Image (cartoon, rainbow, N blue to C red; front, side, top):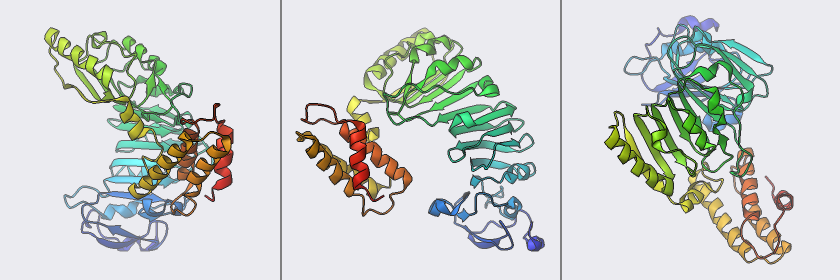
Length: 402
């Protein structure tokens, strides 16, 4: 804690928008800018750029108590939502006295780390295992809280109290024809009753064989691409089932497989299965009225999934995504006329070089463009034999400056 901490305003006394010098990593090391109506704060390394409100080295020691002076206009602790990327775990000690409404932590760990958060008061805890090559073992908070874990789940383990709600979003492959993803062993977390599994709609499918490890689940929410849906029939204790952004429900059991189901949602799902589910839902309502919400909506044709999720530019800023899609359309049209590998190379090279002068192409965008080149290599052409993935990748690497 800095020497001039004595000069800090009383706890909860600052709620007006403005610029405030704070002793985050040392005396007056940072200036906190509070915007009207903004209840969130992001702290991360300088590489985060504008994604972080305050920059701090990943291994910097942070004085979390500097935020105790701040409150929302309604009088609750500010920030309400805290995002932090780094190795400092002092926020868990801080949260023993000052509750955190929602915390998203992306650990950057120099060694395997064990953290005791059992006495911390965090209502919603999100752990993002994307940037650390080391393992995190977390003793979870006591009492009622929600836990979300994303990224490389194999590097995360938990002990202590079971969360009221658990969301898992594993890092899966980009391609729907990859071998199904199998969730790693998650130990005590298998005892949860309320489970959400997140995946991309057109990426590597997650196998639902993992559900055999979750014997107590009565509420299940699935987002994205999954396989082995027939195994859902074994979850006879389900009272709530939610299916969202799922392009393939061909193996889904009929609704009467779950005799205790009283709440059901299917939203943005494939059209054929959606129509069947609507009929089943009405039939079930006659036999036993739904006591909770029940709906099937936003039924989608196969081409919708390709348009919305088939290309790897969905997370790009709109301007960049528009340019990328225009380049993709042009390359696809050229490839459709290609009768030789040389003509295919010319089409993919032309696509690649269009991004050499475009600002904002970092690692993730380069990976997206590499995936786009793979997709283009699989597109229709007149060569008479497939374009090998390695060949298309060589063309991409030879033409790019990013």
